[in-house]
Length: 303
Image 1 (cartoon, rainbow, N blue to C red):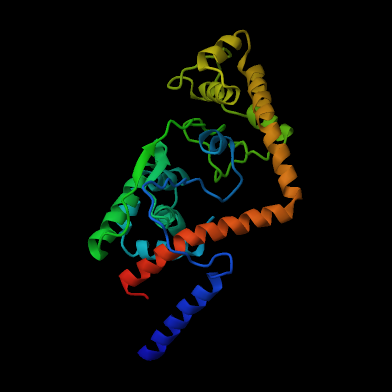
Image 2 (tube, one colour; image 1 turned 180 degrees about the vertical axis):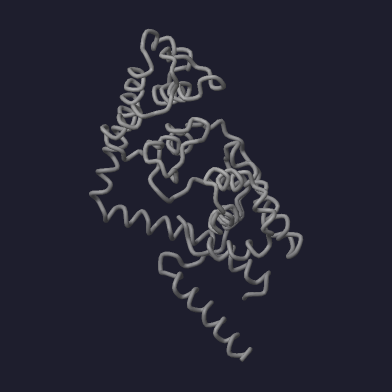
């Protein structure tokens, strides 16, 4: 029975290797580099205003497999200690899913699959980067020096808040559809979302994040999409009440997104080009990640 199980396991790994080994993705020796920066922007969902202002101006099979190995090296209490896990489970007043709990480990797998040395992060991701560093150090301690311990590059990313809850950041996964402005939203949808944005009962436009979070979020967004200083935005908005000011901000966002939406529509119409980009990107990602994971499997005894 044990022998049969071993044969089945080997067959499974052979199948996985055959499935993900394509002509464009043939493994090549990975060249060590003095510095490799990994961008952690999520490829899932539709990018929103915060994603664009904060980060935009391939996920391959090795990520998922390394994720499993790293998950075996971390405890549940360690993951439950992370701030985002506690905040999201408290907000929804229910137990979180295992996907939410273990997602930071997948982030670690994404980063370590390429032996990244530096990762740009915002303040809300510092704890997750500490987990990545702990996993890299733990792996090295057990199996020998293999992964570089990536350093965090703290970025001054513009923090765009939810339009419906200015105490929380804008999120693609927010269940309130009016809370998030997506790059693909129509002008009518953008106007509606800003009209419904939470502000307060004072009509004057001022910037006071502690005392007037909602209006201050409007001002911050307006400044970000126009390139103006916050003080200049406030000065130019003198005499406007918040209801009219919301429409001004909505129009500024629409103007900012107009060329981007035009390019998106053009790219969507050229499916052959998109497929080529995805194919080449996947091949390049696999070229980098495949030899790393092969070595990981040897070190942990799978291969």
